[in-house]
Length: 115
Image (cartoon, rainbow, N blue to C red; front, side):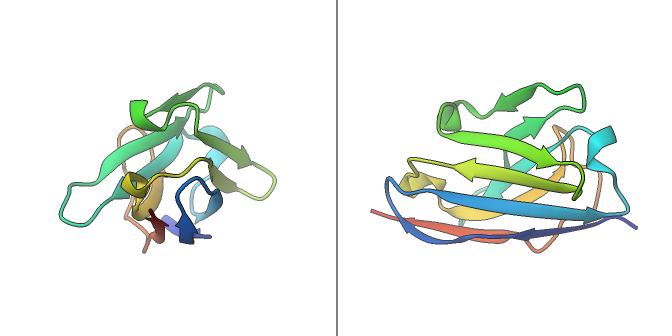
């Protein structure tokens, strides 16, 4: 059973930065295409960023140039560095395989950006 645990969220002012993390058990990130998703209140969950197992990355248009997805394979941990945050980035952030999420969702980590 794959388990994904997200952490590192918080409250930040617009223009600020946060780095969130995801650790996985039952899955080896090095051999999978993984990524980040988010869900804002009242909205559907959406794709945010992908780190393909071939090494390339892909981003939601609205976060390009501000967010960076990376991984420390030695720790089996996925990161999302978020810079120049905007209020519309507020939401519950999740990790999973990407672009198609194939495993049970974790609890997510809340990111709140105040204006």
